[in-house]
Length: 69
Image (cartoon, rainbow, N blue to C red; front, top):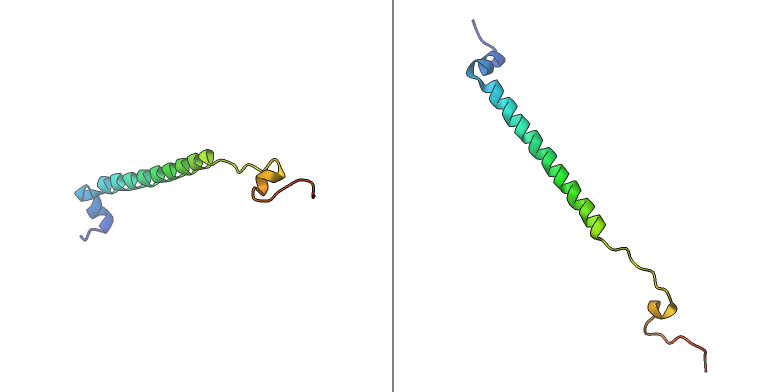
């Protein structure tokens, strides 16, 4: 009687090995995703917002502001 591929895999005990390897690969992929999200959130938290100028002198430091002579 000829065995199918699933019976051969089960007879050799490879079904558990395949399950363990797939579990490790899935865990590694999830871990990489978590680390990438963590780094992106940390980068966003560290980024400072751009402060708007409070006076025209801040915006145009090289230009003279004041009454015309």
